[in-house]
Image (cartoon, rainbow, N blue to C red; front, side):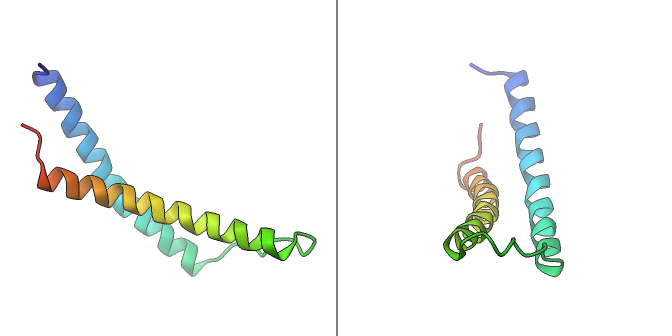
Length: 79
């Protein structure tokens, strides 16, 4: 099952993934070079910490998703 349509969609999926990994890396570098304004002082310290950790965890997940996809397609290429 599949055929030419499936192969085109798979190639598009890989191409978009290959495009998004460098985009995420550039965005991460921009974020490091120009940090955002600090959170308001009336937000409790634990919530500020949670906000920062959640933000960085999302960047980590974006990078991990792209790299895992790259590793997966390299190790197990589709027929």
